[in-house]
Image (cartoon, rainbow, N blue to C red; front, side, top):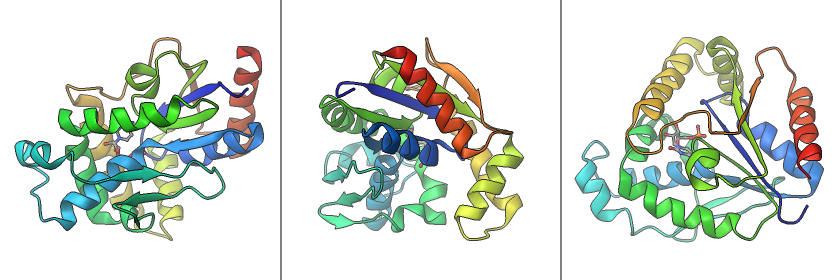
Length: 218
Ligand code: C5P
């Protein structure tokens, strides 16, 4: 299983992170959260005072921050220029700015290179929006994870310590709209991906579903 790559794409709050970490843990694989990389880039732009809605300004500086992801599924980390920003990247400010930033082609090119470097070492579960379609189309297992908006908002609000349900749902749907509509690497179901709807499944059931797919891919 050392070269196995499992791509888990899907909408915001569909359970990608918990599921991907669970699968990686069960199979002894590494784990890469590509959303955290886009969030780290966004956090850095905000901290530098860059206007995140100015695509040219964003593109001009996208090469500057050094972004590094830890790949332990039990303790994922993300650093920018050596500083751990794991907590900061989950803020409301980053939530609101990350989709416009992620639509900028220069941002995607930069992070694509970093992602491929990590994935190329093999044995990894990778979550994102475009892993099976663009980043690593040759992945042995590709999953497209979805869930009803109500279920997604409930899970995300619980994760965020009881945030307001309606505004959480609005924020998820707004990100989905931008992520699915952008010109470069939009969120889409990749060729060869298996669609798993997690609305009525427990985390364990989703993990088992992907483990079964991984078992038959070997
Ligand atoms: O997965 P997460 O919700 O943390 O991702 C945050 C944002 O990062 C997404 O809404 C999307 O704009 C961007 N993203 C992306 N491509 C990926 C992963 C995340 O554009 N592979």
